[in-house]
Image 1: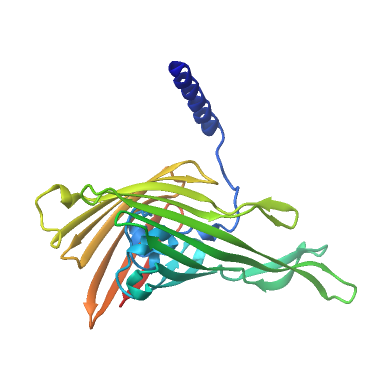
Image 2: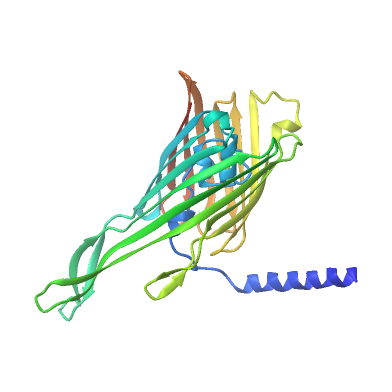
Length: 335
């Protein structure tokens, strides 16, 4: 009986693998701005972030359970992403741990996206074949609240609820007899949820993490239905210096790997490394595979305590194939 069960499982696994090979998931989600990595440190690690104990307000953009490790009363982060096609992201987050985190850590996030200006036209019977109706400016934003708590020295949980809205601007659909444009708005909002857990194994600094992002109901825009870019991740990380007789206050080498299952793409592996010297200077690199355009990432950071305030500045570079390279800056303050 046991052999039969194993045989059935193997057959099912082969069938699923074959189906996945034959069926490539593309263009199945909307509001893709929710899947863009914002934090420069995590991007430098190629987003291999699920098990990284971030312990500041940026954690809410990745695995909210890692927020539970925050040691300071408050943490604030903000930054900018120069995305492809001149798309501009601004993001900010703040977290608070009242009563030394006795009741957990609370936080909120905000992200805005500016897609720039576009020319609007409608079909016409003139020589050009169209009429210029001016410009429109698509925008998007999301904001959310988060909560995380350490249930023990080894286990933490966290979650976020957020609202996302995308406004593609007004479109001219017709012209009445007086020459006045008849327009309609193209925008939609939705609620979504993020969840995460973090488990410290007790073996050196080996940590496991799991996260689910952008969990939501199916949405309908005009006549078409779509879903948000749901992402499931599991991962592990360890400070490789734990395996050697080296002072970690002088040298640290974080290694992190994530396996991801996105709703709109094939399964992916994210891997990253971060070397830190004197708990101050860091350099990072990572890669993701498979990927159509995103492959290699790199970055650096510096953190110092200035007058009782922990200050961190991070930069990340991301190669993006045929598109322009992407640059990110993030600033962190904890006190």
